[in-house]
Length: 144
Image (cartoon, rainbow, N blue to C red; front, side, top):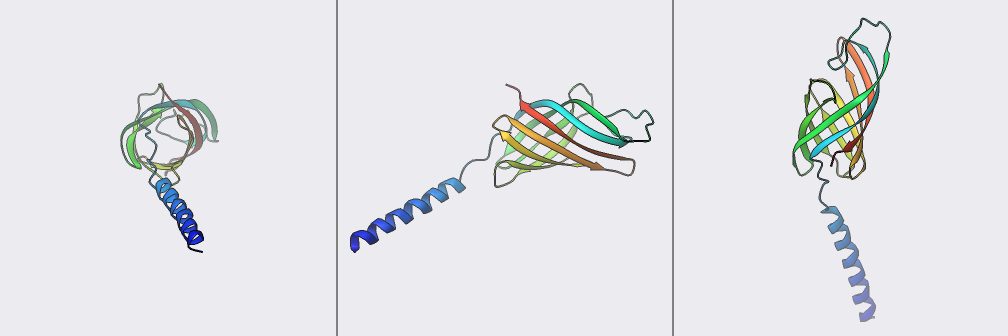
């Protein structure tokens, strides 16, 4: 009986410690430059896209860049914009406990982002202002 109790206690201790070790896993280091194609639908005057006076929504495709300058634990800061553009918007972000989901904001919109691999992410944007609406996603790869 004592051997069974000791064996059971050992198994419980291993399971508990394994779970604790998993909970202490480090957040992924996302510092660097991420570039990739994006697809969006825009309507109205936007900061990154020219407005040619279209009244209807416009389907757009282009390359985007996210630069993560600084990271502390699950929080990071950086900038984002069209790869060939001159405008770069500052971003603030937090990585959720699952270490895959990222919530990010800039000055006029939000990004819901999923890490799809160690060096890949899908970054989706929603923006609604008084003069524009944008929804789109980007598939970014970290540059080595």
